[in-house]
Length: 396
Image (cartoon, rainbow, N blue to C red; front, side, top):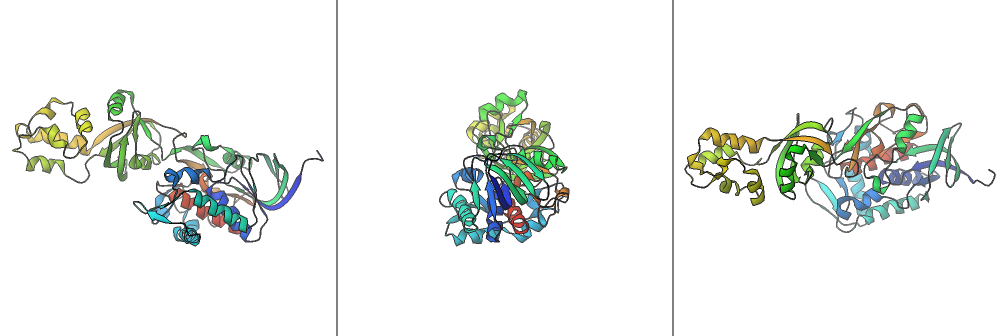
């Protein structure tokens, strides 16, 4: 036992993702001795793979309303104290070129590795000791925290848990953060995949498979929540930004119904009335608005092959309703493998919204995705990582 290294430090950050890198850098630049531990061989993997390799690193419009949390006020403090504009200033200070894509989403012009390297540089400025391929096997709290790791026994005054959620296990996601919370008597709320493609019930699978690859700008509704962006038909169901957004709000994925307005920019009833004397078939008329394949697959009713002028308004209006209120029964999701984030996690009632510190265990902090705060698609989850990481780094 005497050969096992014993290391003394001020702060241990577990998890070198977006939140952990930010917390370590902030704490280190405050003069704290920081050790950043990562159980895989790479840092910032979610940053690297995000945005098609260009990292959608924040959103111009990030505000508390873009987050799902059991306590809807919890995220306000951190988001206000380290804003998207603060992170943009950091990016600009490194001369990283970026652009706005849509809906306030900011991407690197070059590679997402620029963001990872920027954060590593910030850590270096704070003299952060980064340990890769280092696994924590136990954490105890005495006068200080005592961590048993594959690199030795580490003693620290503060521990920051930045281990993320369960999404994308192929890059190292695990339930470690939830295990530690439960060990210290901190409540963990039920988790499920979020920002995730949806599966449909078996009876509709053949239709969706035929439509695989077809995209359509739509409004997707679930109960009183709705999002307008593209949807994408897949061979198992639905994906695309609007679907991923709505998935985060679904209470369960078992036989739940969503409604899709496939033509949000026009009133199809009015269009039918305006073209009531047209000898065009309904199917050909709809090809003005939809991809040919979509019409050919969906126009299974014999009336779609008839001329508009030959059909009663009631029949045409029923067709319009089917398109403006396209009902889909969801029966499952693509799971954590395809989910961008995890909804649920460490109960925010257990944490200080100002510092992210546990109310029960002084010196123990939880930040980023491991916490029950889930952002919308489009850079919001990274902004939560930067904001929660920053405040923990200031107080650890």
